[in-house]
Image (tube, rainbow, N blue to C red; front, side, top):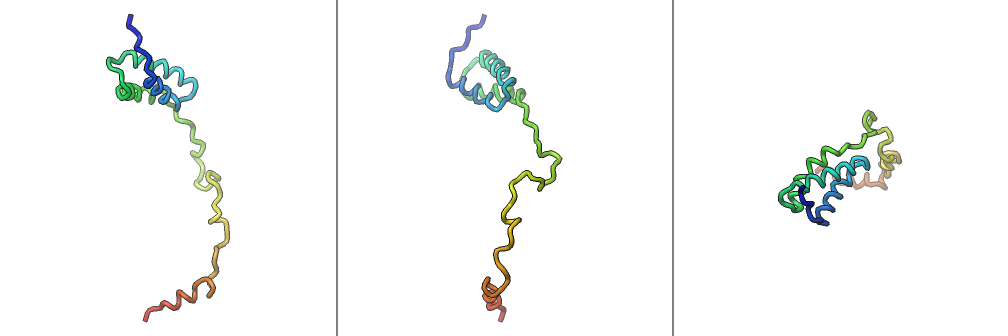
Length: 107
């Protein structure tokens, strides 16, 4: 029978960090599988454990459904824009700079 690996808080934190992005049912299964992988490693260190657990975490990860698929670009996904909905800020009259723009004519 193999002797259990000594408890290392760094490795436990790494397993917990990798499991944080998983759903609750998958999280427990991942943690059990991760502990089995860590117990089988000949050398223990954060880098070695991370490289061993990264592909395992990807096997357990299920991306969430994207509810935006099939919607048009402006169908309420984003907040309404005040710049698009509001009236233009200035009118084209002498007060808004038309006189200044005309004074720089070509000679």
